[in-house]
Length: 405
Image (tube, rainbow, N blue to C red; front, side, top):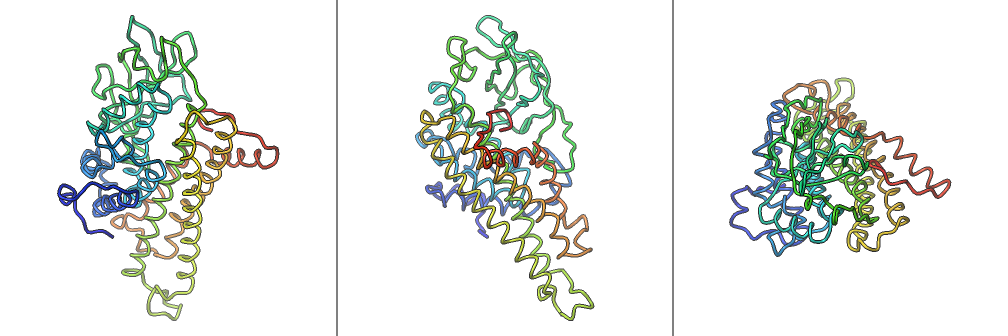
């Protein structure tokens, strides 16, 4: 693992290639890994961790180079998320969600809107959060002259108190149409509640938020021109794009679990007294399980990279995205989401079989990997992902674009 420190980033050239950026992410992960278990226990607001993401340049990875961004694509972004999540699943999630919300202007907005947002975000190193939960119509958007006013409550708001800007979502009163807009996170009427108290992903700042008359100009409503929404099929790519973010921090967490467990096995695990071996690393069943788990992880990673490459072709030419190309891509995303879920849960659970009873000590922190995966994989039922794939195999059905497919 790289021994570079944050201070080195100030004196070295900025990453230029995809591999350079992945290496930078590995350096960030090395810093996060030093106290990941302790930070998970403390569950403190991750201001320092987000500062680390900014100092490393990772927050501007997708931004335009002419404004200080990395100019990279989604294939690289997913790999970066995976690397960071190896050390800290919460910070991997925060970074992945940030990439999606940064890109949301391009997915939904007009060219003028997304060019403005991406330029300002790159120049200012904005960190994005999102108060978006379109499953519930819990925020009403009303008109007041040239302004929109958001009022309501969201159960989840990932990134909340560590974000510079927040993507808001609500239903335009009397229309049933959803409106997305980006506002400063310190906007009047926007209150983030410190009530995220789940068993995993404890540093994601995913608590609830109250919107009490949050105002933003009509011109900031993504994709609206003269108060009318201009839909494109590319708009619906937001779901498979964020689902691939999920896939990659699941796989990152799984890889981190395996690496941490293997280090424990080499340094601390004791052989079974009736096994006839002097070292735990010589136990046949230990060797077998590590071999089995890493093979499953490698297979899932290869599928994730392949699907990411397929998606990049769609991002490269948004106007050419069709219902069929979008649907076929969503099926592939659903397949890898199901596979990554199963693999990450299996790895984060079964590592205890080869680390032993002493490894369950709180100080070791091995449980955080399973808690993190178990918590987020409940975001939407994996059975419905398999159903999308099965219907496509049997009948050629394309998934209907929804907020979850």
